[in-house]
Length: 304
Image 1: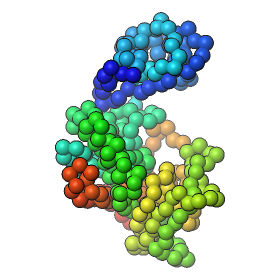
Image 2 (image 1 turned 45 degrees about the vertical axis):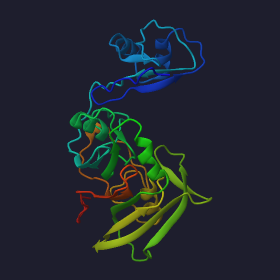
Image 3 (image 1 turned 120 degrees about the vertical axis):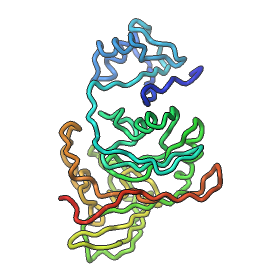
């Protein structure tokens, strides 16, 4: 175990990997085989620069012996990271939490080709809060409200609100207008991972996902919907709308998974028409009733 947590560098916390049983001479040998996208020279350079540590916070050298059943920690690096040309907004901050308004296309936390260009790292650097932590997630393509905690140990306190369904979340979406669809409706189904990468699917079995869907207004062949998820399954809103025959406009995953576009080739002209518009909850620390509303809107007509 750590004697003390490793520092956050440039807004980024270290990643960790478990060392399983195996016939490796050095940690470097293991990392070369474990991460196919990296190179031995790259890992060796990272070790020389003091960017790889054992679970006690001691730097690992290129010749450090391999010790199974341990953790190691390392700082990720990207040679080139595409800039996302949209700016997040901080709409609330107190002693314990920060509520941010995330633009479309900005990931919440480091993932894949994004490290600095994520909401979490941007806010850590901008606000100077080293231990800022996201309490929940939004898809990269979704805009709207994200709740963060500011202190070590608080995240689980606020995350419990989401686990216990004590947070009321209101979304808006623009999707095709379907006159035959009787609304409002509570869509309940069982959602599990699909065979295809990135997709989820509805399957037979006891429902584990519930969404209340209402229509707000209509414009030609499109409509604005209000979505109130009662659970928090991955892609729940996108999948439920698609299953009803009204997939959210500009969805690149449902109903048909579109070809992946590299970040440096994206035009950002067709954002997913899904917005996390409102958050309602009672603060578990102050007992104050909290209500937050996004400054973003979804407007007709939609860029097709």
